[in-house]
Length: 256
Image (cartoon, rainbow, N blue to C red; front, side, top):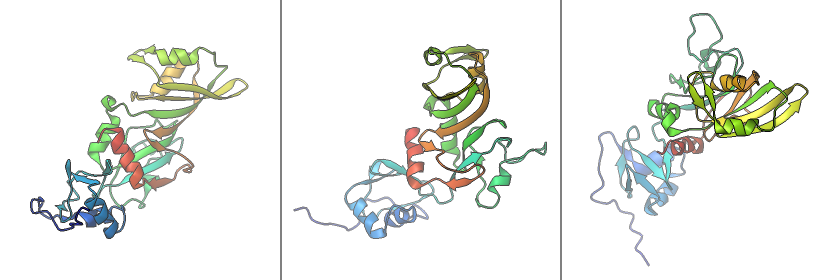
């Protein structure tokens, strides 16, 4: 039977201003300190790419920590927020034209200064992510990471049977081709229809331009997901903090 050696390893690196790893894990919501010690002992925690040991100290602001292969954000200065942006609100924290802006809905509910990840035009609504994590923001917005975004659109109908195939194959726009990753008709109501489409494109007004190009202009557009984060039942104009699991899922979506 292996010896239950919970003593610190002599070669564990020490960082200026560092804290014991189990304390950092517990503060990040992983579990009690005792439970976190057990995770470390069972070699389920890595720090900066190496297997962690009991007694290790880390700087939560800089350490890259994984638990069971999932990235853990231990820096409590970083915040991750989901918002259901209402129609008519511009995606900016300050608007010099006097229009409704994001800051009106965030108010003092988030102490840190946050920035929106990408945009939704004023006439569109739905899921918007806000964070002060600049590195993650860059990766979520960069096309090379191919983070899918899903939209529910109300469009002019009827919808021809071959529309999905056409969108999946690609449509030429004035600034280049675009194709969706998935498409389905959700409902039809007289001369209008609801369709759901997913794509990893981030060009301006891309969904509206795409559907208008194929003869189905959009009358209402709602973004329902960004990567693994879902809008769910979050009410219009409300915000919520992402869970640790959701933040880990975002890191996984961009390969961290």
